[in-house]
Image (cartoon, rainbow, N blue to C red; front, side, top):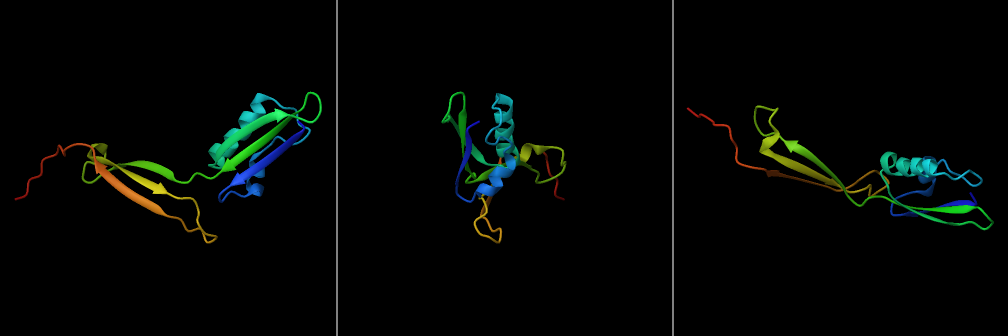
Length: 127
């Protein structure tokens, strides 16, 4: 490996990205090592990742250029339980959309919504 470079966008810090990478200059390049680093960045770091592989400056060498950015929004779906029985998730579904950290104090923006999927199929007796 001739060189490994990192380019970051948004709130991502280059030092944080290097913690997830195992391939360094002088290492032997193989697909399993590239897959391992990619998985670390995506699954553990939660980043959006692109990789450019180019020829190195000498024969039989390669350069890896990681382009890493934080996702703009994180979408989480969860079942919506309004009434008993709690084991029946057919009432609807809710979504939470969360932005990445916007300030040094950890602040972010979140949007919460829920939708009914179909008509309620439990009868209620009010007497």
